[in-house]
Amino acid sequence: RARPSAVSRARQGGVAMAQCRLVAKADEPGSLKIRVAAKAAGVNLSVETSNKAAVPELHLGDRVVKYTSAILRCLGKIYDGGDIYGNSFIESAQVDSWLDWTDMELDCSAEPPQLEEAIERIEKHLESRTFLVGQRCTLADVSLSCSLHRLQQAGTLKSLPKAAQRWFGTCTAQPAFREAASAKPPAAAKAPAAAPAAAPGAPGEAGG
Image (tube, rainbow, N blue to C red):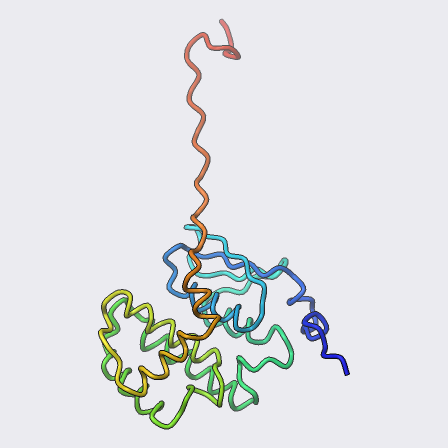
């Protein structure tokens, strides 16, 4: 039996068939998460850099989804049969829990005040697990690994304990992460320069 195509697996409403476009600031911390999630979910995503975007926006035709975690959930549900959002209702709820926890504990500021405690919790959770939820990489792993990557790049996070480092290496070795992390977002479009004022007597100036 032939395997259903991506289009035939698309959810109702034509979301997957529409061009998905991310609009975000160049320094938006959630942008990497969204780009990794899109690649992992097999979603064709174009990226537009705009300094006017107060929060990340996912444009799906004439519809818009705002905020990083909401966009991640949307990408995870675009195709039926995908497992990036978990393989069951319970796993999806667990993914949601990790998305919310990452937002509160690690994305609350450039220097999370409870970072040491957060790393201890991650280490304990991963001591007997390969991934945060279930047996494969999910949106929970995408979100948390990208947050830790950001903290490492900023010099806020110096190192990770054994289990967390093993898991982090697994996440960052995923093709979706490598491709998204190596791609530079496009530069923001510059506003057109104002036309210089016409000098006195220039052509087109109203005469007296």
